[in-house]
Image (cartoon, rainbow, N blue to C red; front, side, top):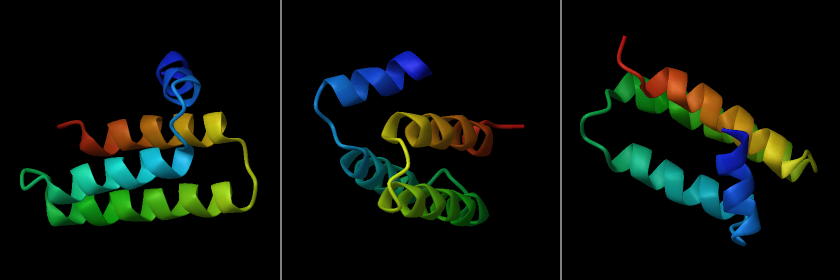
Length: 75
């Protein structure tokens, strides 16, 4: 997971750019239930707030991906 996040950042993608594109993908996926989309939106909001406050990008994207994975994995 850490290598994936580092790869995004080293390739020049900003954390906000990753958040925007990933959120668009999640919200436009008709296979994801609405409740799960709402939980994902809250998660994205939390990460966005932390990034706005100056928290570390790598740490926040790792947090996002790990929590997003648990939300989107089928039980």
